[in-house]
Length: 193
Image (cartoon, rainbow, N blue to C red):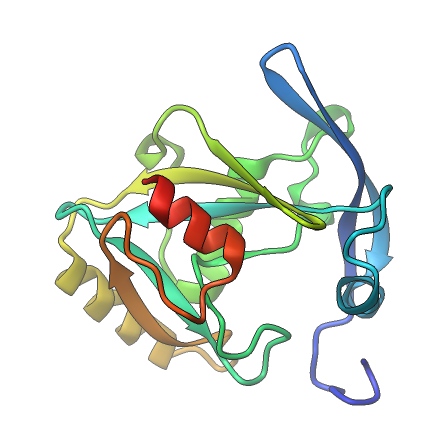
């Protein structure tokens, strides 16, 4: 992957080696790996029993109820796919006592991809977990105090000022709406809303 895509990030990321549900929560074990190793696994072994891509997605919801999603730029490993701004867990997401913070990951990834600064107070209580082969996606809604037209304009302005863009277009969808370029886990979440 690095040889075919020399501009891809290839730093350390966290890949799930197991997860279990217990006491109204979820316990995930991670191991450090390189992004290129993750892509190798993703493209060749997504149903390995002891490895899962466990990550968080912020469902940024505007005051008119529409959800922000982005089309990934050609320079990313998911070019053309339509996602909520999200990304791999990495070492910056490790909080005290070796625990990862899904909410901190969501806020970091949203800022990196859209320029939006989310705060914990915008997050609704609870989360939704969607599982597909090899994937466990943890969704949490963040409420924006602006309508979807204003949110799209703001994100477009911020993304246009970025030197390295991970997204090339921002969309809004109503709960229940899907798009052919959404991965299965995103479409399932949108239908769930």
